[in-house]
Length: 69
Image 1 (cartoon, rainbow, N blue to C red):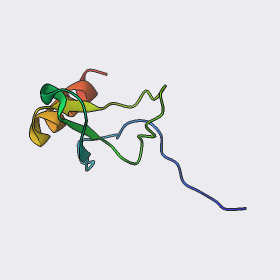
Image 2 (image 1 turned 45 degrees about the vertical axis):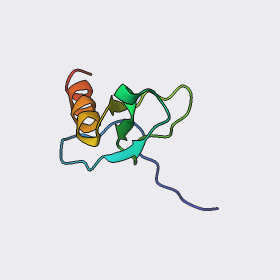
Image 3 (image 1 turned 60 degrees about the horizontal axis):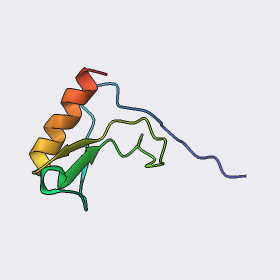
Image 4 (image 1 turned 180 degrees about the horizontal axis):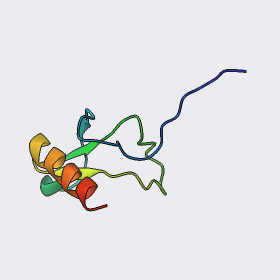
């Protein structure tokens, strides 16, 4: 038996480091930002993902969504 740590959900504070990836979507959603430790990427995932035309816009979108959750 292997013990694994899984942290689902969203970070507790803004101290969390987000992961930013390029997407295949439209230019206005070229980048996505998410908290990798909590994001599983499944179809029904309820974790926050921010999108933007630039990496910084995706990060800003993430934190705006995080504050309004």
